[in-house]
Image (cartoon, rainbow, N blue to C red; front, side, top):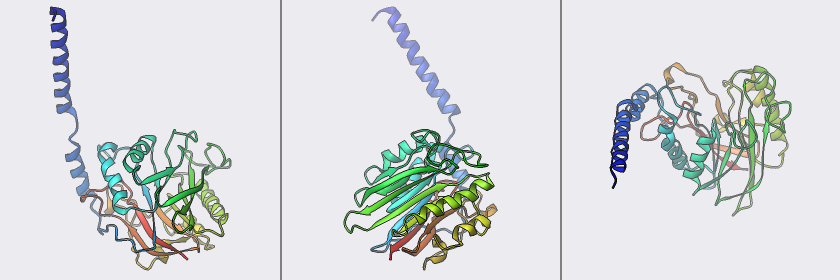
Length: 309
């Protein structure tokens, strides 16, 4: 080896060692950060997934939180999000705040069990957050699916009314490969600021649900609407969709959005599983237990076990 090559090699090794040392010094200890944040995020009610009854369909809504939480990077929660799905094993579930990075991860980790439909809200392709619907691919055949924007021009990427950002609803018609039974899963994320946008989003979802008067319909969402307020009441007023929290035999009452401070967010129920009259609800649960005792997102996943009438 020439003298010049030896010098280059020595310099390269020194650079690598120095970089590793800097990483060790300045890289945050995510395990320690997670544990500290977890102490603040302990729920008053600890509830985990129950065993699903034979013949029931489990549906879930899950806002996975687009980025980090305080100084905890998003990547530190990846395993816990995927493991939550594996623990619950819903027949279908809707996600909110699923960035393209999240979607790549979830597709990779869950592809042995799940397929999904959905697009990024920014361009209708792969840019912006998804409100995707995942479903058990060995159990269900995808019959039909699409995405529409919660706006005056639902057929194209657009921001509606007074909304702060573009919002979408993704839907899928699923057919049980063994029984031939079908159901429709609608999944959405309403705007967090626009009052008129939320009001009109309610109307759009109800209109879409009514299109399937002969099929069971489930709607999952982070509606950014607190239970009991005007727009929530508008959603359930005519009975097109009913909140499984109030129709399930086995149910509970607890906040769904904790923001790492459950004690300060009492009553913050923003996430819903609603069904039409072709479904009966057996179970409604807000899963607060997390994974290995750790919180998973700033929202709790919410699921319902439902049965086709």
